[in-house]
Length: 519
Image (cartoon, rainbow, N blue to C red; front, top):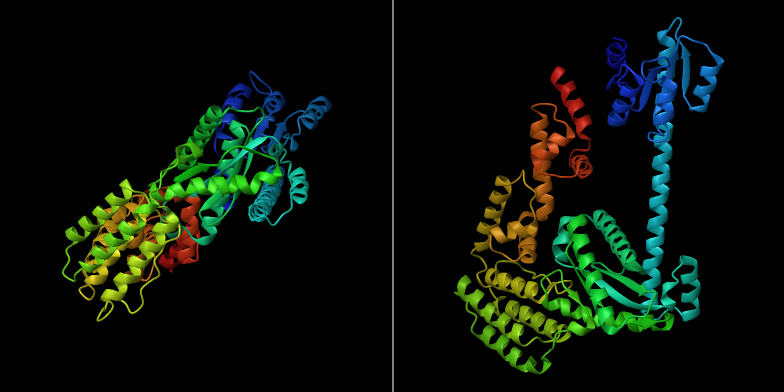
């Protein structure tokens, strides 16, 4: 009865459970984890102080209030030793005393939460600064801007002792980086790169000693060291195992797809730049992989750079035969033939990328006259894309560009919008929508933004929040229920999006709606 009345006038307090003896009290308290426990001292099976003594180590934040009919010094002394927050003699029991004790307990909890938040913020700030320092240090180190004696001093301060043992450098590269960049805001990308670095480093530490750091937009650098000397075969096995774990953990915990490239074994600070250069050369092979590859010096591609002129001739023939009436099937077959040639005769990325850039430019030059699609063609997005992604982008761009003015892809954007509307309650990805309309993800993303004046993920999030608003106008949904209804897994992320689009939290929005309805 006391709490029924109290909860109406003070929303901070809500009765979550009750028990009739000390043993039952322990069971309920461990299960419910309440912020505040009010207990008698004399109870069947176990007294209140003994119950608190058993619970205190498990629930250090819980505030305990003891009621007793006995003003015994022994009880009071035991209560003090058990860190009981308030000791109230209940003969008679005055509600004012209990209200005062509850208010004090709530104040203590707020202070604890505030301190924990400040401590957590401090920890995050320290860690973020540490990773920023590491990023700058390793970037300068691999560029040869830091002499070895300065590197050694920095290593001692950061407790990087493993560089004097045998180590190898590795590079982790994000696959489908264009999709990642379109899916998250700049601040969210920064947070995720920080999380990726943490997971890489934890995975490395499970297999030996090492360190990881953010290297660039889509790349991370790491070093793996072993206490004992390894044979070439053992090194190969360890690198393959660690690479597989990094790929698996990042996909499992963050749904991020990556590839990992290892250089050969080295020793000492003087070799770090060389170790990085080796890993970087191995990572060039990612260009011909789709995703989640693990590469070592022993498993490199054989490049056929002597076939460059032959491939250039094929590109010239393709361009000569390209007509305005080309069908989608004809275009897909032509690009499939180019892909087949490169699959059989891989040409190094440093040679291939300029050839594809020239092809993209030549297509725009050939069909620019009278082209109503756009007055300005975007620069060919060569950064962070694999060969297949670049070829697919050029293929979709070519079809769109040679048929300029017919608005053929407008129909595909409308199909994408309809697909989004039908599946708004699901977790939608750029890749799934692009596949639905049969376009390369990177080109679909570019086309969608050009047509709709906003990115795919921004559009989807806006639609999900609009749906949430419609639901809140019907009844007072909980945050969890709203997340389930609109297909957003993370409650914190949902609340962040909601406030970005409405200026209010879901609770604040509902309060405003209630006032409006009552008015």
